[in-house]
Length: 475
Image (tube, rainbow, N blue to C red; front, side, top):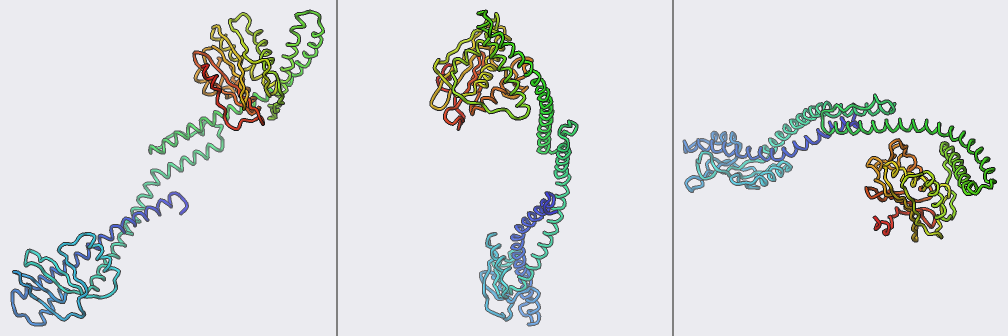
C-alpha cells in the first residue's frame, strides 16, 4: 500500500496538512497567551472596582477578589497617581515584567514559546491599559504555572483538532485524486498491457478518453506511438515475407544467369568487331547480376558479406557505369560527364562501389527522363588527407519533401512514382560497410547532389565528415 502511488499520496497529504497546522499552531498559542494575560488584567480591574466603591473591605473579601482574578496584587494608576488597590503576600520575588500595551507579533510569539518550554513556576508582573479608559494603566502580579498549564491544554486540543482535519482532508483528497487521476492512469496502464500482449492487433490501440488535459495528451501520444508501432510491425512482417520470396527468386535467377554466363563465354570467341567490343560489357553485366543474386541470398540469411577492400582506379569504374547507363538512355536528351582524374585510386570493394554509383546515376537519369527534360549527370571526385569524396550531381527537378524525409528507408524513400526506394537504402548500407557516409548534400530546382565519403587510414570515419568547401562553393 505504502509503495503505491495512492498510498504515498495519502501519506504526503497528511504530512503536508499537519505541517500547515503546525505553522498555524505557533501564532495561535501566542494569541492564547495574550488573551489569557489580558483576561487577568480585566478581572483585576473588575476586582478593584469593589475597593473604589467602598474604601474599606475586610481581608477575606480582598483575598477572594484576588483569587477570582487569579493575581496577587493589583495596581491602578488614575490621575497620575499610582495606587495599590488589592494586595497579598508574594510567594517569591518578581522575575519578569511584561507590558501588553504595545507588543509586536514577533515578541508575542517569542514570549509564548519561551513560556511553553519553561517548566519553572515564576511570579511575573503584567502591565496593560484598563478597559473603557478607567485609568492610565493597570498592573498585576501573577504565577506562570497556571498560564503554562492552560497553554499546554490549549495546544493539545489544537494538535488533536489538526490531526483530525489532516486525516479528513487527506482522505477527501485521496478519493478525489483516485477518481480523477489514479483510476485513469490505471486504465492507461491496462491499455498498455493489453496492447503489449498483441501489438499487431490494431483493435488494441488506445482510444483517448480522459477528461484531464495532461492525461489526455499522454493518451494521444500513446495512441500515436502504438499506431506507428503497429504499422512498423506490419511492414516488418511484409518485408520478411518479401525477403523470403526474393531469396527464392534470386536462387533460381542465379542458376539462369550462370547458364547465360556460359553462353557469353562462347560469344567472346566471335570474330565480329561489334561483338568483340560489346561482349566484355555483357560478360561484366552478367557477372555482376550473379554476384547480386548471391549477395541477396546472403542478405536473406542476415549474412551480408563485408566489402573486400582493394585499391582500384576510380575513373575506369565510373566510365563503366556511365557506359551502361548510356545504353539505357537511348534517344533521351540526357548527357553524362566524368570529372575524375585518370590516376586517382580509391580503396573500396569494386562490385559494391559499382552498385552504389549505378544506383545513384540510374536514379538521376530516371528523374530527368520522368520529368521530360534534358539535363546532365556529372560524377566528380576529390580527395584530401582523410578521405576520398565522390559526388553524383544532376540538373533534375530535385527530390520531393516526402522522399527527403525517408530518404534511406526501404519502401518509403522512393523519389519516383512506383519506385521501391530500395536503391538508396542499399547504397547507404554498402557505403556504411566501407566505414563511410552517403549524404544528400543538395536538392532543389537547380538539381540534386549526393556525396560519398570513403575514409582513408584504418577504413573508418572517427567523426562525421563535412562536405568539402570547394564543392559547397559550386552550389
